[in-house]
Image (cartoon, rainbow, N blue to C red):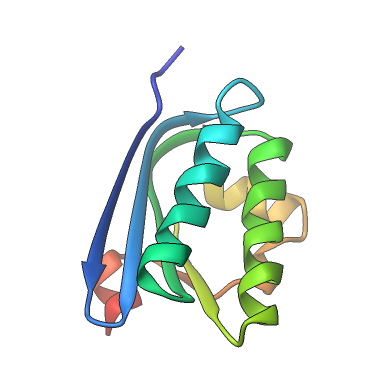
Length: 111
């Protein structure tokens, strides 16, 4: 199993959280906490970079959807970076892709 790695950095008014490895039921609480802390510290404009994510299960998708709803309640935004691959296919298969602005690259999401 891949180890989950999370990084957080500020880009102007946006905060970028990058996830690498796998997000599943065993580590989803860490992802939720990281996203919550990023928003509390840096504000309600979030980009989640999933480029290096190799797997996400339904609990991980649920965290992304709940974070999006919480941000929208605060007039915030959340975009995903998910180039073509397993994660994007899972977002599409579960009909969650239309909820998010999804970009192929981080530079596109930050533009």
